[in-house]
Image 1 (tube, rainbow over the protein chains, first blue to last red):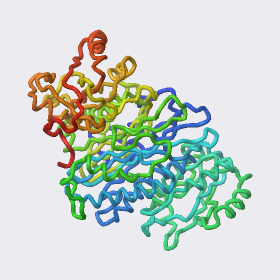
Image 2 (cartoon, rainbow over the protein chains, first blue to last red; image 1 turned 30 degrees about the vertical axis):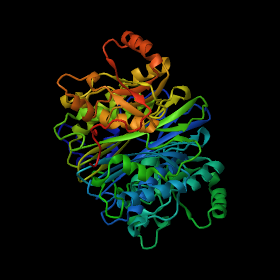
Image 3 (cartoon, each protein chain N blue to C red; image 1 turned 90 degrees about the horizontal axis):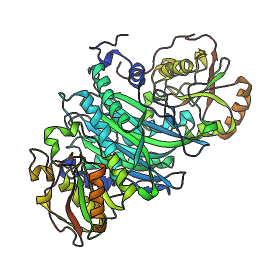
Image 4 (cartoon, each protein chain N blue to C red; image 1 turned 45 degrees about the horizontal axis):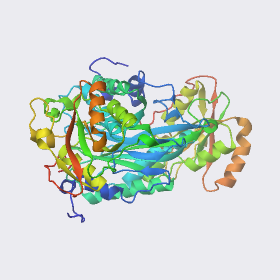
Length: 300
Length: 300
């Protein structure tokens, strides 16, 4: 991998770029986990809690088109950021919106985007507390930053998976081909229930596809993994390839001790009868044990 | 002012747009001041403190050009957001960066932007805790969200100015024609000193120019104002017109009881011998008492 003077962004993946950018950032002693993980975690004045911070964005012609319903754009912009709260089992509380739009766009378009943002925020009792707008001569972009909290004892990250853990995913994979990436509901309620009732070793939300996110979880946990492809819960019309590579499913992938697996599955069916929970493999001691097609990675 | 279906953004100013967008946002009972003011203020778990939240952005071909030094772009992106902390006398703590860039941009450009962001953050002991990147087919954009705190007793806003108050500005105005908008230092230290030693009734940072920001402060305080144009502290080479209309000075404008003015000026000279502090007018009971050329307003 080159990193010389003339390297273009298209030559390196987002993970590597962020890794290089964020290596030498200024951080204070209250910062527990900073950029590079799904969210940032900082110590709160209240000792039992942590502050969770996350920002994400959607860009016209990358994440949506001129034909996308504006409400769906707003919904997606908010929910992408909230999905990372599901990943860490956090509670999102306050949202800040940055809207970058062309001067010739219609006010009604902007208002409809905000309607989508607002509906999505209300769904999880998030207060939108700040908004900034700027004009641009190019594609529209919407950036959403959210601040929230998580109890120290319930915080889950990508790290912490143990060799021998069972791997589970919520819902069905490969849905995004049908456009569900525009109206998905992050698994925050499910994640909060999981950490209230079980010891979850590691968790991630599937934003870039199982093929990218499962190796990330394994790498962060310093273990390998085995995937049972035949077990993958496919969405209607989706292939195994869609399920592994498409991304934007926003389902949860998590690792849990096999000793808790049975109780988990029984309780889950009672609590969430309409959402599947599927064991799709396990963590093992061999690192990089299985290669997977990569999911969606920015700049590639 | 039209607000029908076909209204273009270019037909309405940013203040009005934000006003319309933010009117019916979901907010919870912990939200004390939300969008529309310089920053959002929410109740902290610690009863003596408030949480401050702010987001801002810079866009290529709007706030900087392809020729601008990347370090200066990063510096400006961070400092614009931090300047709002000066306005409310808050302490910025944690930063989140969203970087929207073209795939064919050089990695070194992005790294140099981050160098600027990092230097600016260090200047005020801000920890950059999160970063997100996205590709775009258009102009680059950098959005910076910052979370911090302010003591309940020291929080200042645009509201609270009283008829009869003296109006002061820090530094010299009209500097941005010389390019100082790329390397300015927000007046956070000065603002913290002011609220530690004086009762500041209302304050704002001059981002859009005195001509736009002074009326905002007066309107929010429900009073009028008189401006002593001859007293305006002009930067070298700047005209009164520059000082009123150019924007991006990022100096502080504040209202204080005339009974405190003399002590303020004496102590200021001792504490900040190299930074001027100038009385430029006062608040009066007549609303909209004096018209001013408008400063820079987005979309117009």
